[in-house]
Image 1 (spheres, rainbow, N blue to C red):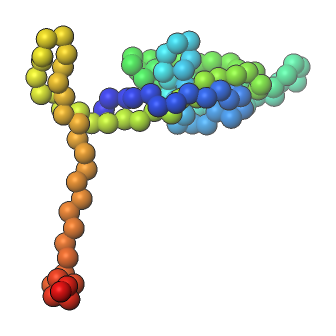
Image 2 (image 1 turned 60 degrees about the vertical axis):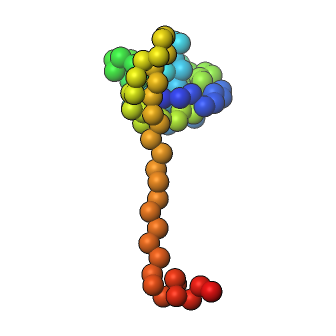
Length: 111
């Protein structure tokens, strides 16, 4: 599957949910774990685990509750490699084609 970046918007660290895709340190990461911590001293914070989409490496981050992060909306598509044309790769994008079966009753009622 090839990811395609659709839209980015800013949100607070408190709005991060498991499954979100973020841009963290310039890389796209998927959120795998979100923990809220309230220590006895100091302010509350979030301890998050991210998986880098390209490398698969796990990254841990400590974020303040009001810290701004980039949440990305990403669309994935299936492609099949066809051939090389100069510096470009030509690929086929799979599109779901629905098959409809009509009953004889419906077909006979048409003029």
